[in-house]
Length: 471
Image (cartoon, rainbow, N blue to C red):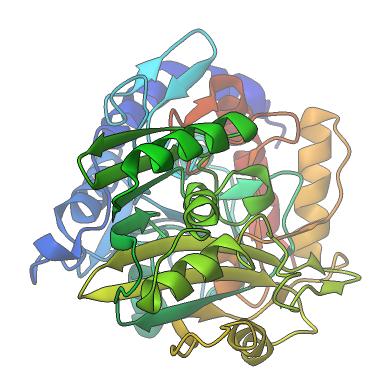
């Protein structure tokens, strides 16, 4: 059966954009404060899942909704015992500040679609869905069933997909359209380390509040602090000089008597690639640490402003490690918070290769507390390193399909990001970001190039058809 996958995609472009815009309009950010038994992760993720399943039901597909946490669309022979899984997600990161357009009102230009989730992961997920449509419309023979599964909190702790694997049989293999091409067959381990203690003052300068970061897997793009000092004019002048000396950031400062409010604007990026961003919080701490703070405010600012500042590989903590296959460890200081009289909190996110352990990372952070009475602990959603050999047919087949459709070099690679692909023993991540395309995941003004999404529909359709029929 000879199929022109790109021609079949071209026939469906207009419908694809219509459905994608409908999905992007749902503000599917997890919000536990609005959780209910019917919407365990808040209304947004549930609504996005229902929207995606409704699109599939409109087109006549078999669907299943599991507790409004995760759902799937299935094609292929119903009597086949084995199935292949394509794992995507409909939740998105918080929009953050600084958007030029409404993040949940999609804007389509001549070459891109702009909205939160366009690139991560509603655009690629919808591309996989349209690959399903092509396979179904053309009645492409499939040896196994195929499930396109949508989680609702990939950007958090994977509650939905964890639930799926608790109640459904595991797939034989599959991929996640939630990363980049040519393929991701290795993913570093992912661990959070949390420092949580009292927020006290004691010097001549008082730290009232400090806040930076929305999620552990985002490099903070903005930081705010409120301090009290009798030398407010001098502090304002010094901060303006600090900004002028660090052209990679911007900010502003306002004084009202002894109260001073400071803001730093850095560069918000995905926490898996912290070296491409500018951590607003550690810059602000680096400036403030030289003032006469006392109590835990001093320790908090010193820790953020010295060993944690401008170090994305953990070198200052002595945990920098590189594996020959999986590459180097990366470190992101994702959430930073100090509220006087309440809490001092720092959340680190490490992407680590095989060869170093979370306990060794914790030991490195502990060794540099410099008298701060707080204990770094492992928290959140820890994941071990994942690797599928390049010789595995799932890897070699998808690489061949990618090369045949694009003519571009096809090779395996390891990333620091974590995708649903790692939930399968023979799972990989496959697109939809092309090597020469800008990566705007987790950033303000997120967008996906239309041609990349169209190319991905064709690649996914052929890729699914071929891996489903592997021996």
